[in-house]
Image 1 (cartoon, rainbow, N blue to C red):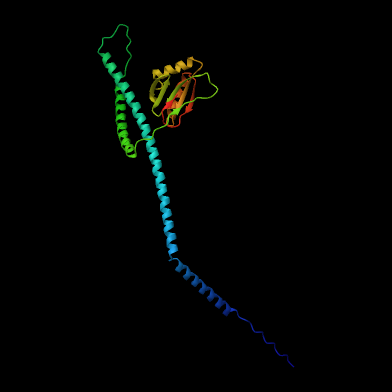
Image 2 (image 1 turned 90 degrees about the vertical axis):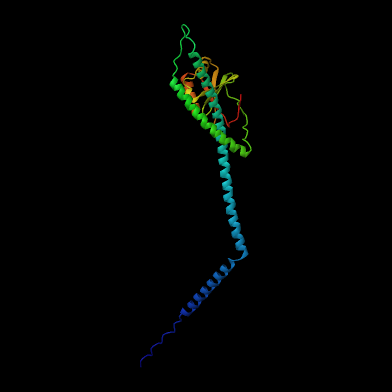
Length: 261
């Protein structure tokens, strides 16, 4: 007698359950999205948006104020330098005019016996005077513009006096202070002050006589006082001093105030 075939067990399908679960997840996602979109139009969100916008504007305003303050500081520094350069050029122009008048007066006098008259390059002298007159005119216009601007701001700031107190092991030295600026040097020799253009350092008799005197006296020293814009002048002046065997040192000078020795 043949055996009866076994019937297969019933298989449970999970497809309906997964479908229901996916529908539930999709429905919850739509509900959460709708709630989030509804909350974006509330007063709290609008207030937060206005606060962030105000913070951004405030940060930009602060950056603009800082930039303007830096520009004003640079402009005031440039104005101080232009005023000092204008004063130096006026002094030098006055000296050149006096030398020119002296030469014109001497040209009318008869030559004395055994008098050696130095050769003067008149063309170069006139060319240099014309260049300085043009530069003086430009600086005068610049000074007027800066003066008008400073008048609007209530006047320039006063620079503090710079006190020079040399220190070190050389307490018995005899220093001669030479100030280095952008245009040239200022020799502070006791009660006398002399100005020399940077272009004339190698030939100026006052500066060369000072270097010769320092080279001949063992305790004498040239102390260069270097302004923040006088580094190029210091390099040229120290090179001339080294070439004439004059011992020298240097001190930095902070600011543009008057030097108190």
